[in-house]
Image (cartoon, rainbow, N blue to C red; front, side):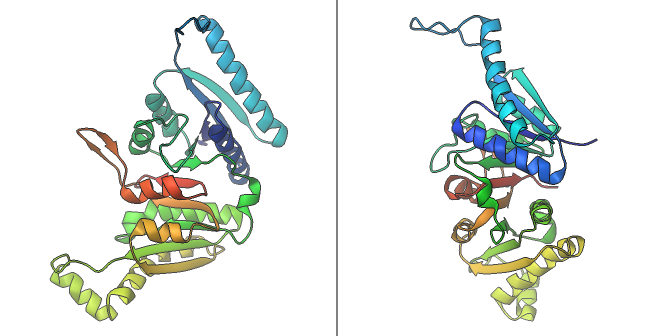
Length: 291
């Protein structure tokens, strides 16, 4: 089954930028585009005429249709469908993500994620979505995807730990003719953080940094073989993963991070790395769940 790229829109500038990004990516990958809006009937208040259910739904459908027409004018070759779905935003977005190649949403950054993603909603979507979720800021333009701008991807742990994020980054780079910059950050471990076996491997590698470089090379090896057309820059640097990724984000077309999410008694929580880049990276950010 061919999965569409799905864009969730809500009329904000951020979500319309996400729609345009999703349309360009769908064209590159030869995939259909699905445009989705989640809504709930609002009764109004304070003398505001919110209309009846049918009227509200028509307002929403008209707005979605206008956004879709703009995309069709720009990409007449693109297969595009629209859906207006009544229901909770998190449930709706998570459900449509299950049938999508990726879910694309708008993000304000530098604070809370806006649009569909008010308060904890964004974190819940990241935690629950079974497919990659891409966040795009207002103002994102095709000119931001120029040659020389890299696909930056974070790698940590063993090869399998970052396999899904690396796969997403390499496929995206291959479609765009872009370079992948694979980033592995490392810090000095506490005295008891490593087992004797790990310490032996580090000694054999010649020290901590050579060990980290070998670990990154091992994780990249299968993806280099699968995508021989993609140029790769291996970036190993001491520091926190979030800080190192942001330090190289200035010329990135896209930042790709793996999902490190969990549920707590007070709600969904995303990993610190994803949290940092979502709020501070100027480029679109893809959060990829484990394979």
